[in-house]
Image (cartoon, rainbow, N blue to C red):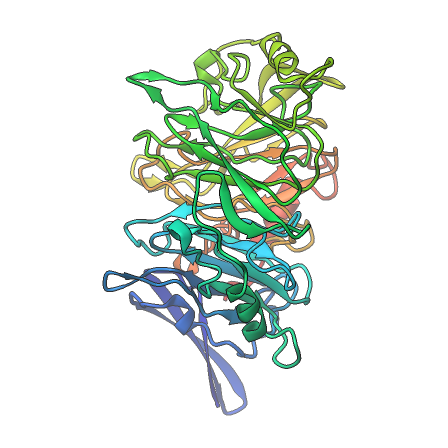
Length: 489
């Protein structure tokens, strides 16, 4: 009997592992094979019986791309079936500029409140692996997705660019039924303010575009333009167009400006040195009509953009003590301490930003990098002790790493928690790929790099990290030892 299972697949190489039963004995043979498969998913058998000890499966889906010079408005494959809890669907987002946006079955082409959204991921060069977005499956229910690209009045969603996880094969909620519903969604003429997408209340959802930063000649603009949007309805979208040089859209509360809100929205840093409009966009779907407060988290070499007035609001009151101007004054009064550096390797940097329990601390962690020409497979530091309200800022360096949450008992396996996705940084540029985590409690949290490394996974090689690991019992060293014993498929 011969069973072939394809493992450790990436865009450049994969390995072939063969189990052979000879005279009642099982012999394992691993054959490394070099290839450049046109479709990574072609090499993933959809229904292979995995060997004992296999924890999770990754299914790769191509998003868009080119057929010669003709844009492909399609997910390939259009659905994945029999996906189990803990499995990962890895979206490889190709040309030109697409999204992976979750909706509901009954309201296609409309972002689901609290659902998954990759944001726009431009990939004009159509480079496989450049823009990847992983989704960890947390239950076996059907999930529905679409591309939110408006396409200059020819939206990709209505054109059939939809996708499903575990869609029923029969009945009235199949993928084909979802596609037909999407095709029937009305398209309004394109404009700068209306995207033509239906809202949950039946009207047309408005899209309001906000410029973030930019240049006035050669002078950086430290401002959102406009600084607020008013009368925004549930279902509307605020589309942030993030320009030069490197800014964020980070949610805070009114009472604690310049501090990330626990569980709030955060675009992360989006470098756009060329100041190209539409290159780095970040959509926020409005889920209620309450005021919401945002700021740019760029430390600015000791001159933070937030304190300099780079703040923004949705539905800010026009009168009273909680106006945009009042928020801006509070931000300006936040103390600035030291000269923060995005490349610091210290375990923590005190920013002096007040929280309910005292100064919030930003802990900077380097992920990977190079020692000369040798890849560094390590988080530096490997753990931090953090308080509620603190921020962990991961600076993801060469070559292509992740910050993926697991549990202590199942290292090297995503637990459906935090996941940065793959962040390529081949040039090893500090600050080019930043990923922040807001600490919401003081419990231990465990992380690893999910890079398969052509058969030498980074996790098993010791590339793990912890927040608040115990000094005894379930220690960081114990977690690392567990990770080293995880079978390599």
